[in-house]
Length: 131
Image 1 (cartoon, rainbow, N blue to C red):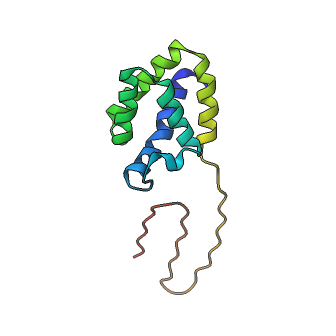
Image 2: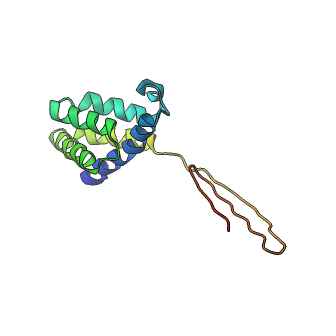
């Protein structure tokens, strides 16, 4: 994986994780430390040791939807990986562990009759209006 793709994928993996934390899905970060994204986050905290990199990670954790903060972390992460290329291999492995596993969903529906309507949805936070 090239450097820019790795950096972008890392920030993309962290952003929803931080969003769940901000929404109160986790009362503290340590609850997820055994899971893939938690390990990724803790690894980044350790490896991004410069003050500006640590600040970029912490600011994104506090405001994960801020595109400028996402960009700031990408810049800091790119600098760190460029200065120590061996970290890219570790990060690639951690990112692979953090990737969500695919879930197969099979649905069957039979709808009949006048003005009948049916909907099937898989996933989270879906909203459906049938009129």
